[in-house]
Length: 351
Length: 252
Image 1 (cartoon, rainbow over the protein chains, first blue to last red):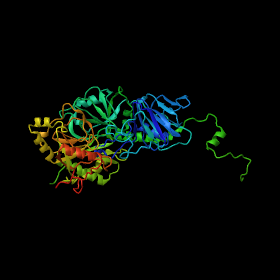
Image 2 (image 1 turned 30 degrees about the horizontal axis):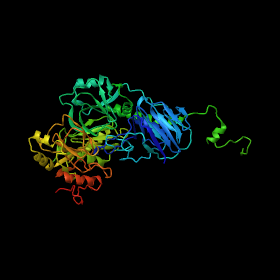
Image 3 (image 1 turned 120 degrees about the horizontal axis):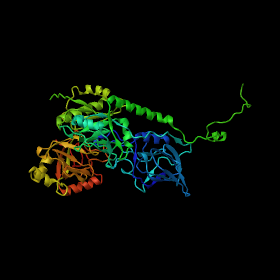
Image 4 (image 1 turned 180 degrees about the vertical axis):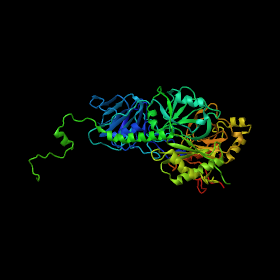
C-alpha cells in the first residue's frame, strides 16, 4: 500500500479542494478551502491540477509518516516550523520550507508545527490522495459527515491512501510567498437586506472595528464589536439563499460572515456580502484579529475578482527551481538532462 | 390564473444575485420561484453555477469571471415575462412517521400549547398536504409549509443540542424533517424511518422543492421494523406508486 499515516492529527486537519458546487438546492453546502489561493499554490508546487484535494491545516499541523517508496509534499499558506525525522534518528531542520516542494522517502516523518501569519495552510501531495470524491468533491463537511476522509477531521492512526506509490526525483520548486498580510479593510457590497438596518446601523458597519470571535469555524466567522441596529423590519426574514461571504446579523446585532461550510439558506437579515476576492484573506484570519469594512460597488467587486484571477494565473510563471547550483557544472547539467551533449568545435560539421 | 409577478433583483455580492418575488410563505410565490428555476436551467446561461429556490426567491450563484451582475440580470429579465406558476410540478409522497411519545418528544407540549388533544395534533399534522418550499440547513432537509394556523408556534426557547435523525418537527406553521442527528430548535412531533439523505441514491436527497408530502402515522413496532429495513438498505423509495415497498406511494 502507498499511504501516509497520521501520527498526530494537528488541531483541525481536513481534506479540502475547491468545493462542491451544484447541490445547494438539495441543502448541500459548498465547502472547500478557506484560502483557495494557498491551496492552488500548494497544488502547483507538486504539479497537481488546481482542483486536487489537499490537507487544510488549521492553527497547528499534523505529524505524518511516509509509508510508500516516495512522496512529494508542498506546504503553502501560513508559515510553520517543519521538520523531517529520518528513520536513522537524524532530524533535518526545515528541509521543506513554506511555498516549497520536497520529496520524502519511506519511513521519513514530516512534522508541521504551529502556523503563523495565517490560520490555515495547505499540504498537497503529488498525484493527490486516493480518496473517492463525494458529489464531485473531496472536500470534508464535518457537520454532515460527508466527503474527505470519512467525513471528518483527521485522527491519530488514520491511514490516507495515495494515488502514486512513488514520485520521480527532480529539482524541487518554490514560489514567492503569497502576501498574507491581513486586509486593512474587507471590501463588501451592501445587500441583499440592507433595508433591514437603520442608517446608523449601516454607518456602524462601515466605521466599526470588529474582533474575530473564538466561536468562529469553517461555517461562519463571528464578530465582536459595536452591534448593528436593525430597522423596524427586524432581524428575521422569510428564509432565502446564502452566498459565500454573506454577512448575516441576528437579533443581537453582531455580524456573522458565512464562509466555506455555510448553510445554503438562512432566516437572518444579511446586511452585505464580502467581495469574492477578499474571501481568501478572511480565511487566513484567526480569532483575535481585528477587521473593518469598506463598501464598494458591484463593478468594483467584479474588477477585484478579475484582478485576483489574473494574480492566480500569474503564479504558474513565478515557479522557480528551489536551489540553483551556484557554479554551473557541465557534468551535473548532463546528468540532469538539461543539455543533450557537448560538441567540440573541431568535430565534423558541414561548413 | 394569470400571474403578474413583480419580482426584483437583489445584490448578494459579486458571485450571486437574488430574484425576489415577495416576502411571504406562499404557495403561489413558491410556484413562480420554481418556474423561474426551471426556465433558467433550460436557458443554460453562461456563467451560472447553480440556482437555489427558497420560499419566496431564487438565488442564482454565478462565476464573476464568466458573467457579471448586470449581464446576468439582463439575461434573466426576459425569462420573467409570462412566467406561469405551474399548478403542481413536484412529486407526491406519503411518508410514514411514528408519533409515539417515545419519539414525538414534544407532542404533549404542542397539544397543551395549541389546546388540541394529542390525537388531534397527530391527525391535523399528518393529514395536511404540505409543500416542500425549499431544502436547506443540512443536506436533504426539507422545509414543509401549509399547516393550519394553530401550529404557528415560535421555535423552542431552548434549542436541543441533539435532535435524533428522522425527527419530524414543527414551528411557525411549518415542518422540517432532520435527515441526520443535528442541533435544532423545532418542536418534535414524530420520527420517520425513511432516510431523507442516502448517498447510494442519485440524487441522494429524497425530496426536492415543489414536492408535496403527507405523513402516514405508524405504530412504534411498524416504525422499528421499517427502520431495520432502512438500515439494511432494503427500503426503496419511489413516488410512482408502482413500488413494491408500501412506505411511500403516489397519492391520488
